[in-house]
Image (cartoon, rainbow, N blue to C red; front, top):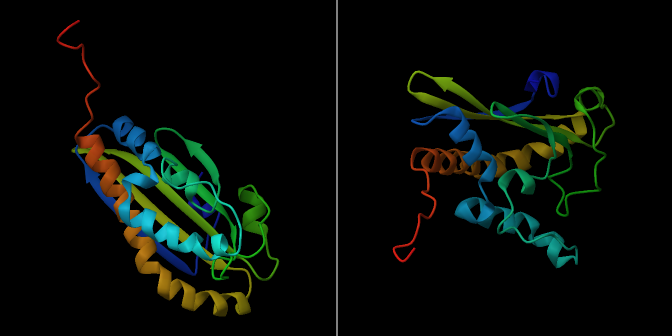
Length: 192
């Protein structure tokens, strides 16, 4: 599956990539294990995003210990380890409390969705082998279902895009750094 099968003609798009001196499987393993506590900027910004809902009495699971992919407000739609993971869904992110819970849709239903008042969001992380190791890339696509929603979403995107971009780069950095410097499992103790 590709993003073209989910959000083929985005109004907004951002892409980031990083070369990593490690095999694709190691990069994939680190990517899917990146927790929010490993992302200081992402953790702070996600906490701010959830603050209005918390103040309104809505409960959310704690962020620490949860993976970035689990915390993302759009569900994982497709995953083919160790190559690609795509999260995609509907959102009303510009609303202070995030709007009503959207229906969960498959790729075809999301692509066909035309009810006004929503944005379609798709985010991909792709792991590709290179001569030097691995290329880890991410792309995010957004499009509105109608002109009014596009106008409502535009200021939100202008404000949130730099932070969202920084979080994507932080995920690439953490996954890449960890894949290049794998943590060594504890060995036998000296007393054994």
